[in-house]
Image (cartoon, rainbow, N blue to C red):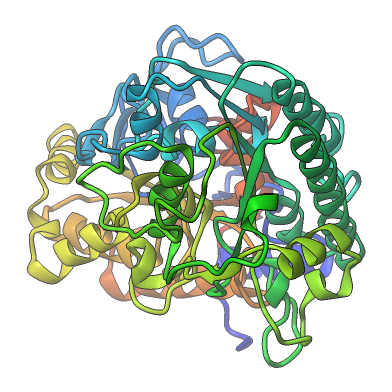
Amino acid sequence: MEEKLGVMARAVMDAYASGEEDEQLLPRVLVNGDGKAVGKIKDGDPVIFYDIRGEREIELTLAFTDPGFRHFETRGKTARFTTMIEYHSTLEADVAFPPLVALEGSLCGAVSDAGIKMVKIVESEKAIHLSYFLNGKREEPFPGERRVTIESDKTVSNYDEKPEMNASDVADAVIEEIGGDSDFIVVNFANVDVVAHIEDEKAVKAAVEAADRELGRVIEAARRAGVTAVVTADHGTAEKWYYPDGTIDTGHTDSPVPFVIVDEGMRGKRLIGGQSLTDVAPTLLTLMGVKVPEQMTGKSMVGPDDFGRRGRLVFIIMDGWGHNEDDFGNVIKKANTPVMDGLVAAYPFTTLAASGEAVGMPQGKVGNSESGHLHIGAGRVIQSDRIMIDEAISSGSFAKNEAFLRAMKTARDEGRPLHLLGIVSFYSSHGSVKHLYELLKMAKDAGVKEVYHHALLGRRGERPEAGARYIDDVEKFCEELGLGRVVTVMGRFWALDREENWDRVEKAYRAMVDGVGVEVADR
């Protein structure tokens, strides 16, 4: 990186030198010559939270917008929030790109309509994926749907300390349900995805082996009970854990994912086709003898006569478990995975596309848990919010978005600063720096006099020291535009929580509202 860096970019580089990394970077706060924080968010200020995806943005938004917030002290103050997409229907926020209605004709909807009892079992780290996204962005459970959430361990600061997470408790709950009366049991093992985002190969390998071990316990229980099991994943991570130059890539991947049907009656049979995650729902419904909704364009990988018995089904999602034949950077291959290896060898198996256009993302872009679970449940391609937003930028309608313009008008007419809050990345699943730049240009055109940027960093899928480079790019963009200052920078660990770790959220809040953090002198 060049020597001449912006003020906040230099602060991030200094943080790297002291052993900090992007994901858990302690909040950096810009202070003026009097030692006072610059750009604090005040009561009534307009804020545009430009992140997409949304499930990790709910808690911070709630802290800023709910006058009755009780998880930590906010003194009843609220900011006027505009969010890029709807993070949750109950939040007090102006939404720039409102959601489409919940999908009709989804996997779980069809199971419910058929009167089949279903239960979903998952660690809290991934709870929203098995509920909201798998249900086609429906917040409420379907009739007959029950949810069992195993709380992830909050006593560890990071899951490299406990790569097995609480997968054994998840497996215990599944085994108990196999002995019960639920006919469709859905389970997510979170280990591989969660731990593969940490730069600790030993921990990632341990996470893979833990997930494989607990998968084996579930499969054995299903066999004893005569219950069919289907195993797949939502996207890849650890199977491509290095960039071509050998540096660690902790992000998601463009790999396909495994798909295998574990049933003694299916031994020796071949799957029909199988192209992408959109084929999963029709296949599961066919196995259960449920009519495939007409909205699904995916194709079943089994014929109606290939499976002579209609019965109970355990559906297992190995979150983040991609398929890659190459040894290079493949932590899954390095790990001891006798269960998955044995299933692939003995039962009908294929791989399914889980990235790019196959899951509603731009061509060549990696998959993620949101799009993966959404497409598993939808049985058809659903265009992502990112594509919708990027098309709005291309068409010029982004610059005319009424929600954004309302926030900017508030800032201009009331003489307040406009705050822009969000991830800084070329392509995070939570957003893009391109969206930030478009908002800055809009604010300039709208006559806003002051714009403060509150930046969130994460290393997932990024090169080493990428965070500092992004911040430097933003600082230079603002300088050339003649508007905007980066005033706080912090790791996404603090701001983008989704498990009610309110101490983390408070740290992010205090940095932006009270200027509490590592001070960075303006110069």
